[in-house]
Figure (cartoon, rainbow, N blue to C red):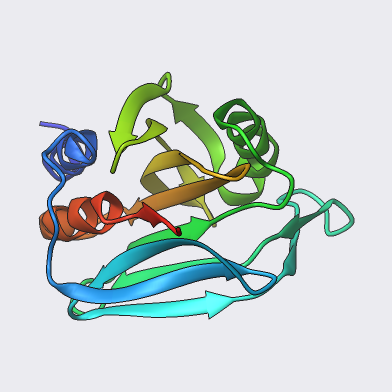
Length: 189
C-alpha cells in the first residue's frame, strides 16, 4: 500500500461527504456577519469552536507581493480540539450572484491554494436559498490540503462564501459540526 494512502483516502471520503449529509441544527452560538452596519447572514458556531473576525485587508499573491487582492471581512472558525481544520465565511464586495461568486473564487483561488484540482459545482439549497458547492485539493504553504467551498445566494444582491480546509493529517471527526454550521447559515431579515 502507498504510504499515507489510507489516511488521505479517508480524509477525501469525509470531505466528499461534506454538504451531502442532511444538514441539521446543532447547539452553538449565533454570530451575525455584518457589512457597513447591515446584517447579511448569521451562522451558529458549534460549541468548542473558536471564532475570529477580521476586517478589510489586502492579500498578497503567491508569486509576487505586488499582486494584491482586497479581502472583505472574514469569519474564521477552528475547532479547539483539532488542529489543521479551518472554516472561513465571507461576503465579498461586489459579488451579487452565484456566477460572480465563481469568478471571484477563480480570481482569489491561486492566492489561497496552489496546484488546485477542483470538482464541478453542484447545486444545493441552504435554508431555502440557492447555493453551489465544490470540493478540491491542492497545496498551501507547500503542504497538501483538501477543501470544500459553498456559495449561497443571499437576498438583496449579496453572496455568502464558506470555505472548509482540511490540512494533511487533520482529524475528520468534526464533519458533523461543520455540516451543522454550514446548514445553520441564514440570510438576515
